Image (cartoon, rainbow, N blue to C red; front, side, top):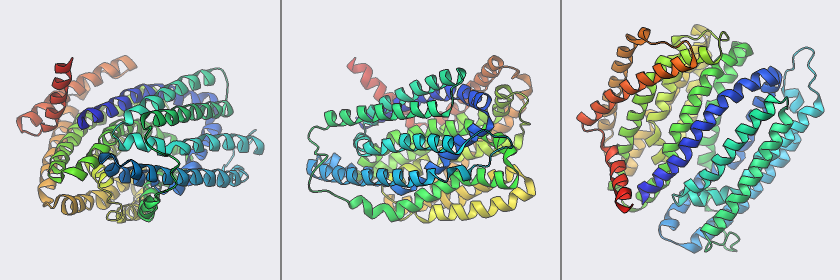
Length: 505
């Protein structure tokens, strides 16, 4: 049941996201062409401001989900009711506080944006668009508790189907609006409608799925607040680490370089999101497993680690070969793509993929306090190295600094904590096996570089065909290596589940 639900969670997250990403390629192009650089920049500014305002939740959703694992596993209705009632009050207050602070910020948002000479953007237009975006962004906080129940109960696929359906609908309508000359106000009103509608549906679905839960229990549990001091550090660190690169690039190299950076980032970020769905789909199952059988949880960790390197191998090897060619086709003549940028961005994607088991087990085991130094170290190393390397080797220096910061702060610390405190095992075999996986990726990348001149990437169709051939060849080789070496144990779980489902049909 745990594996089946994890698969449902993944499928309802992953496949709709592919469609949303493809639609997004067209939408991003239309935004740049139809809205222009100023309005596109305004939208980015609003997103960044809301990112900073979201610090107020302190990562409480993760804390609530972690605390719901055990009572849901034990069917402790009273404890669940106390937690969701306490959580509901907290998130209502957070949403209200974000709204009030956001309204105050709206009076000053005009001064945060550097306008071009002759700009027609007015103070009232910026305040109006920001307020609509603010309200739209605050609405989902009203149903965080309802979504958390589904996620902790390994039924995230329920909310996935609702949210992804509205995302697809919103993306399609946005394209129609852009093609017909509409602007930010109409797009933000559409966002508000979708968030209101999806929140209402999720609210009633949770009431129907969990009729025994009292969302307004008098006995409210605010225990998740005890995790805030540790979770807040993680949230701030993640936010700073994610935004620091573009800020440094804009300040040191100028805003003209940012679109070049963004073109690569859009591709790798969407791949990160797609692959990240695997993590989110299994986290609840891991939390349940840790509460019941830590020995089995260790076996599952090894399976997830093998799976993460398998995914990294089949995605990153062909991607580093074809990402430049895609950008050249997608945005012809706008950027001078190069190998250094391709390698740096794919390295970040690679690390994101291989750390999935670490992220999953850190969250599922509630190791927020034990790992609170990680984001602090990451920010310090990233900032110091970025400011140093950007003046030496330019834009790639920022990306290299980010990758080194990930390794120092995350990869050298979290495995030791997880192995010692959760599994009571030695960590060196983990690093030893991973080095062999990395060696395979390097060998494959160097090998495929030699055959790259034989492929045609001159248009969308030729790029797609050539990329598919490279992907299939790489997949076959990687799968064969994993199967022969006995590291494809993660496939057994999927095959067993499929057999059981077919047997019931």
